Length: 552
Picture 1 (tube, helix red, strand yellow):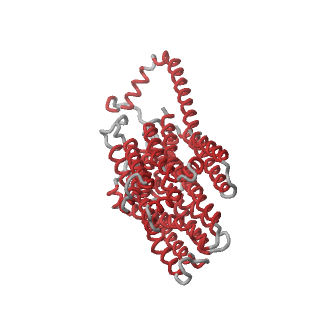
Picture 2 (cartoon, one colour):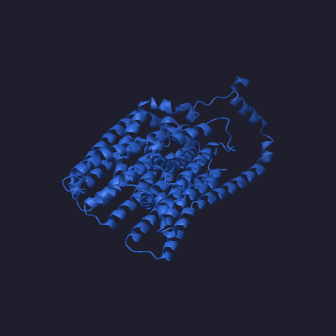
Picture 3 (tube, one colour):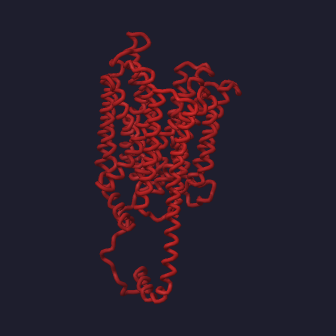
């Protein structure tokens, strides 16, 4: 039934909303620092392992490919792809956050720093397992609108940090240790309960229904993002009473639960369609008795060897398989192609510079004289701009591909060029520059997380998509480390050495962000080469989708 894949999509969305705990590190990091007697450099080291764990999802992709692509694995087996990956993520999430919580409350001896780094890596690494299972399954369930569904999944993951922060402010305000325990329990339990619905469903593609229901979920996601932005701005200007906090959380949970209405509508439509088919079949049964000659002719056409004079159809619309056999590459085969490294370098520049920006945005605001409330608002709103980029790039790229025939890498080049402009705005230091610059960089950074997995599935095929796009995603922490430490940190320390331990003024980050803009422009050129190299492939992909639409 078609409704089954919408149930899978809703279950994946709910899991995505709970698994972005790595975005809430700022809530419990002060307690982690004080309880373990860490200095700032040690806390930064632990944060680095968090970033690596949250982005290095190669193992999750390998596990998905091994358990989902094997013909011996059946969808009712506990080792079935999405279920195995979700279970592995739940185990890592629980053990990582639970033992960090035990260390913070003093229930176990204080772990050595390498052990704490490992625990933080495990806790954040779980996010890649949840994300891989949900995204790859969704792409297989909605192949005609892969950009939109990836944008929705990645968008809700981007919003999950803001959702978890709202839960903290309502239920655990001033109790970060209790919030940490919740992170150890909520995502694993939710994943284990819902993962049985996350599966690949081989059902007929009805493009009109797909678009209608995807638009419904897209509208819900935008409403959730707008509501969170409203709450963030409001809470940074006025204080909420406990009942107002509770009411705002209830409204948020109602909005997050509303995608189930899409699955209910799809199920009702399935029942109606089934009833209509049964009625049509019963009405036409008498007529079928006189169709033996037609059946014989049809058999002769389908089996030309049985009849030498079978009719031919010279103008038959060819199937997509007749036009294009998408090359399905595994990770090692993909790494031997130029397209893989073009995509990797483009993401190294784009994702790396974007992550370096958010990691330093508060300090940039401080150097430019922004108040603590303004800096907090900038950090909080980053998740909204990140969501708009993730969802918007996926949705818009599908529209441009279906209606205008634009190849998806073209939108990536536009995104990288715009991000370079955002870096220049941040580096210029004019009044209000951080507001405009953070919007541009945040939206463009988020768009890379939506476009990259979709482009990966289209260039290298779906079976090993999880492994390949998670390998390319390693470019984000690698690029961020190089740019944050080697560029931003080095130049800031050099500028601050003449003023003490801190730096004030536009000169503190101007040169750094002009360098980031240059790096991003280089990424733009690399993405442009990728676009040129894959134009032929995308022309055939677009033709195949047009034919699938015509047959649907």
